[in-house]
Length: 69
Image (cartoon, rainbow, N blue to C red; front, side, top):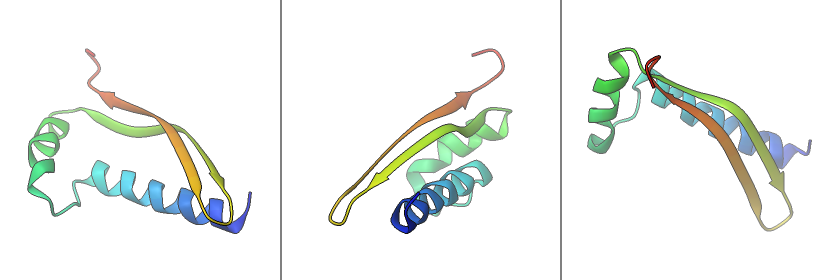
């Protein structure tokens, strides 16, 4: 894994952690945080990052839902 790929992976994982912890200061997230506080999960299952000199591409599989879902 290149240094660029590692930095991008860290950035995405930090964002996901902030969402999971409800630590984002945007009003559009508040209904999601309320739903999540009732027992829903938000976690990265897998994350793939490819970075070149001028562009990077990342895709992930996220688990987002309740036990019932």
